[in-house]
Image (cartoon, rainbow, N blue to C red):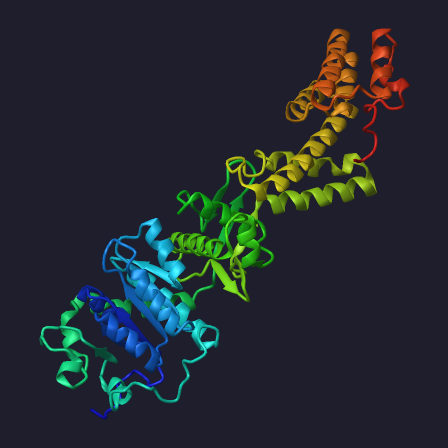
Length: 485
């Protein structure tokens, strides 16, 4: 029992799996057995004992029932060793159960039946954090404190790195009961040939991915109904409405990390800190699980230095970024060369704007300000386009654009003046006067104010049939909008 395991260095991470279901051990043995040291036990009391006396890198706790009693074990293990990450194996992943497990202190959740790629992904991610010194502080002990003599050396002696503590197998005796430690052969025999090949398949897949360029890309559309396309596939199902909004928020701010506490304040402002943190954990977990369907090897949401962000390795395009880039070009072009030079950019902005910002999430407080800011950019864009049409003499188009602006904001007095001028120039004096009366009504109803002197003067000119009332006010383009806003 003193020989070293073949292919498994003694310093490989050791994982404790606490679960009475032998199907879990078969899966873990097949997927992780060649890379990690595994300790299995169905005995909760034994798990509580060895968690303090053995340098585990992580712990997987299986669900026993449909109740939340499993959270008691998780809470106990976290109380004893708060730095060791725990993953919950959920066989009945209801929302209240997931919330209770996060509240008890789990790092992540994996559902049963266990997906091989998901298991490897979660394990490797947690182990990577551990190797960088961020997961635990006590995993680099030079020797364990476990009471059983030579336990650590016995653990390392098994050819597959398995140890079964209090686990009934086909031998009908546990490792502790027999006084020996399994060499792993009994467990390997329990695994089907198909499962045994999974580790090799995953290894080959990882090698293939590493040999290819990273083409992860994401297109996010905020204007109108929120949509996300990842690697040319539409993300059309969300784990929850809150998770969808949280993903939108992170995507909108994809160029900077967001502090966890800031997210808690944005999405759960009325909740206590612990409750908000648990809710955030649940939402993030649901998002990560959903995003894994697109690329199981890619971590889409990163947590680092108490901040969350979209993985900076992912190429993200958003319609809002595109719109703001065009807006800057339009404003700069108009300032330096005039409206004619900027017109093409304004036209492109109007084409991109497919609706108000996240129009299907109007009840999320964080989106309100962004919605109003982008709406204002769009309305000013339409004003510029209508002005350009007016200058070119395309009065029918200018009228339609003015109407579209007023449908969205009926208090833009300068647009009423341009509309009055358009009607006057096309010989529809009655329409011009009706536009003025509607302007008076809307301003009074919405703002409780009267029209400005410029609008009243234009009305009087049109009413008295002055030949060119708009020209007499100083600009044929439209009063009040001859300069860039």
